[in-house]
Length: 267
Image 1 (tube, one colour):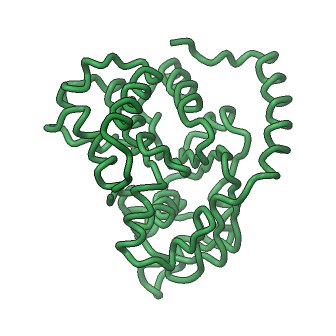
Image 2 (cartoon, helix red, strand yellow; image 1 turned 90 degrees about the vertical axis):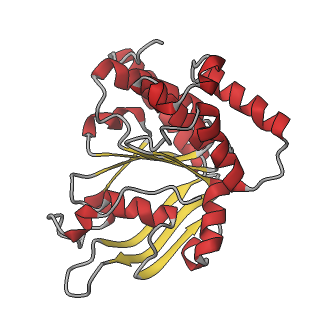
């Protein structure tokens, strides 16, 4: 797999493409719309999240940064619906997501949101096929098994995984293979929204470049929120947001919110 060339000419070409891409994004519908969003665990402590307004267009790939303790994981949990806002609203794909019931949010998440976790969250004793097909099962779509199997094999091909891994247990795979299986699971239902949480923290530079090239390719037209504390990742994205910009009234110091669980997959 080729690593990304970061020379000056590549950056110049990237900037030119980025300008065209940004213009195209303006014509698209809104994928994420946040308004007057606040979240706290107790009223005695300051809000962990305090965002007046934030919009992400459909098809946009956004890099969201912030140091440990800035509220990144809490925001991911709110976007995934595993936490509900204390105040304010979250709309996803023109649906009032934060106003849905728990069951409705679970169903919406399974069908429309793919998550790539930092620790991958594969079920170790299940095979690769079983791990990925679990996402298909929870989405409860009317896709036939034939079509689903074809999509799975297509994803494996794009992710440069041979079909023989389908029957291997997840804990028998290398870290790189587990990472790619996690991407396949996140994308198997063609989600309109893809959330990627710190997936490169344990990778060296070459492996990180290869992963990012692969991820951008397979993500396609999905709206992607890529979360990392590593500012060096900005160069892969057209739009950058920081937690300090989104939530300027929050003092980014360590609070109880820093122990909030990573975005969980509740299908």
